[in-house]
Image: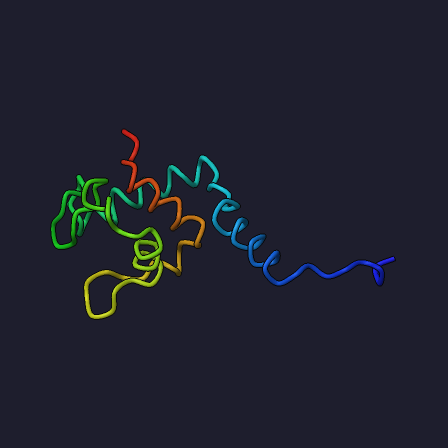
Length: 112
């Protein structure tokens, strides 16, 4: 039966993969979301200001991030910025969590 099935064309595979990558990221669990918000407020806030309006690091407010590409922000969080004080967070955050954090920063963190 499997021998009769035709393979997907490469373009269809690419579209399927793109849709999974861009929309298929599961959100962290509610308890992990609370942990991530705490991390952003405390750890990111130590350099970017406790209100994320800037300090040693640049502001992380929705207005400041409005014109920044999501992929670039995610890469900065995940890999850091060599030669600067911005560390990589890939040892404690996965890509889904980084995506969730960036989305929250771009739309505004929820009130505590």
